[in-house]
Length: 177
Image 1 (cartoon, rainbow, N blue to C red):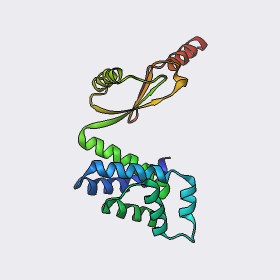
Image 2 (cartoon, one colour):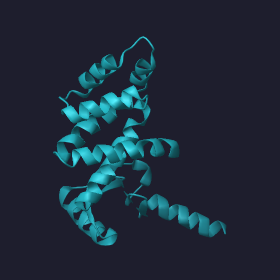
Image 3 (cartoon, helix red, strand yellow):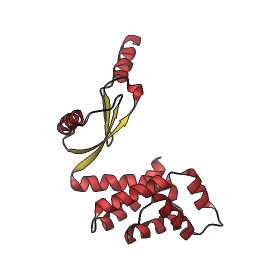
Image 4 (cartoon, rainbow, N blue to C red):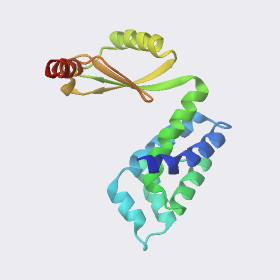
């Protein structure tokens, strides 16, 4: 994992420098679509075939992403494929998001909940979390029934776990000690 992050960092930085001179949100959407496609193992196997050209891989990816790519995003995709870094594309896009969020003063927050969160409740949770983490958050909610109750929040490398599962684990550890 660290190796992919090391490979991805210079690509993400260069990508962000170019995107920041244009429409970052459009680039973000197109890159998200490409990263989703690049995660497919069959696509990577197809791309690794010596019988397949880089342009064929690009055509398949653009068709699968179901979007028209900006010329800069298309050039970026060409470079990634030409350098054999398709497997690192999702990590590149993730680091691009981190750079774009840092530039706009926003951080991504993954909120894992055992149950669906109503919009009004989510707004309260986000307001509380923004105070706790000291920055504006862009929340993404994912259901995780194994938490039993409560939420687990991941912002960058910080984790706030108030789930019932975590409380039970702490009680178990305290009783076992």
